[in-house]
Image (cartoon, rainbow, N blue to C red; front, side, top):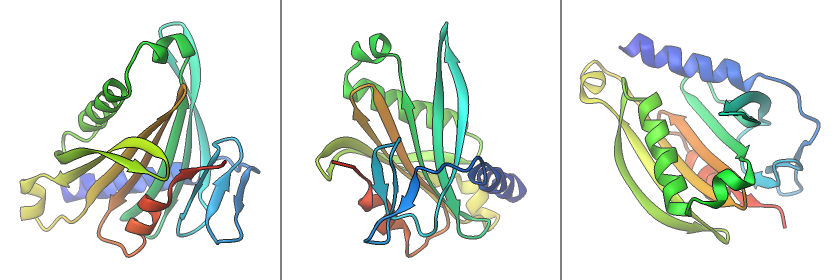
Length: 182
């Protein structure tokens, strides 16, 4: 299973090396910002950008991924989706966050389990903070790492800020820095 965990990190690393996006720039404070994503965050190094086409029913939209990694076991990521307005308008923030954590839990069910989730407020945004821990059998085999995430909604856009990996001194700075461009 440790090999499976390394495979997950490797796949995330390759995804982070996606399309170049000219709208990612370094701010005067040393953080990175995205004009189209309308956010600023303290990625440890310049993130790569990937756009993935997605579809729900007949509605097509893109998932925008901004990722960087420090070695094979430390991945910093911001993802956002612009959902069709009619689809997201009928959902409360809590429903969106709950569905986001459930989707994440389903994707990572083989290796991680939800440890906790709690409502937060960060830089003027209400959201949800969650943490996934490695399952015991992986820890028993010497596996290390966790997933820290935050979900935020701004209109029909939903942001997911995540860190996947072993403990890193940049994690808290990255996770706490996410904010929208005013």
